[in-house]
Image 1 (cartoon, rainbow, N blue to C red):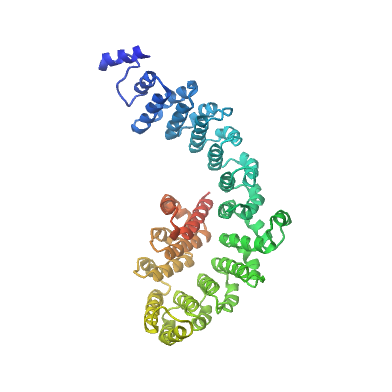
Image 2: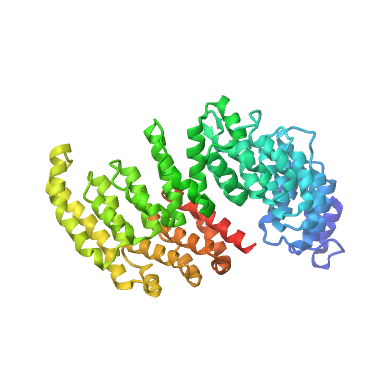
Length: 529
């Protein structure tokens, strides 16, 4: 080896065969590997190749050959990462053969993880048998990488093993969590009973409700049917599983309703309507059950929900009043306006304001006089509240702050008076300085059912205001669920939407928007499948 390298150095550009000085050629890097004495040096050569910008498919024979003959797990890991940069299916056999399922040292585990990650990134189904073997590794990181790879490959063969891992108390919570997520990526209906249990499973302070909820959404229609059984108290298997874990029927119902509402499934409407009157000794539990049901009906734009919700918007508690008024806005029926105007005069400010905001999102210039009357009455109400409950500042200052709120919410009424049913006008309002106007514009476009505006609405996804972004996603969701045309139009927007998700990862302000956007991406892909 040393002699060949020396000869190459002396002959320079004259170059014997296999002695290329061009770093763009595999021969050059083969010589570098030959010259390296220790595994750590060979790892550095491979890492340098990866960062050189020269790596391409012409290097596959070299890398695959080195992987087949190399014994060092450190170098095999480096070679696997290099092959992962190229992502060529021809590497799958060599990568699968390079796995070491016997040794349990750290270097071997890191190598197995690198191979699992690369097999997942290549996306070739021939990798599934090797990845299934890695599920038995004693190293959690290796198992997690194998689980993620199987999920990305949508490996239905892995479903039974992943179902077991999802609920396995002998595995770490991280393994449980990844298995739940992978079952959603695969989308096999067989996983639904396990995913339902994962909604309620607790490991110390950790739970898996978020992952299980999204995974059920990815499965789709089979999950809707199963959730309806839970909401109606008819899933005997889940009830039997929950009983020794101290999860009572009310918790099962409420949490399942919270997941069901995301699906916007027409078959859920009768069940959700009944849950608007859900009763429970725990008032907080009762409110959650009713609020989840109301939200599902709002997203469904269920006309049958208008009357019962109108009767609920005077609730004294600000949280349920906020939800019920918001859901009447989603339904979009002007029939609710008298009840909302009345609710805007009842209760404390933190409850009244939601009803006033709802009036601004449903009404138009016909409601401006009534809205202005609400604003005019607010100074006296502010003074009364400050006298009764106390205020941090003077009643005059409190009234002035509330007047600003009314001014903000008057803008959507004015916009509605201008645009009426003109969607082109509403598209222009997506760039309005007022966030409530932008929110209303997004909802008006979404409710219209006009798929030709889907891409225009998607272009507003970089909206900084979190509530407005949620309204944009809701509008897009309605368009996508109304037919395939919007989903087809949004196909080219998927990279931008996925980048938005990546950019917002970990940002608490956009947590709700990101959850909604993830589901929208699923809907677009499902419609285009």
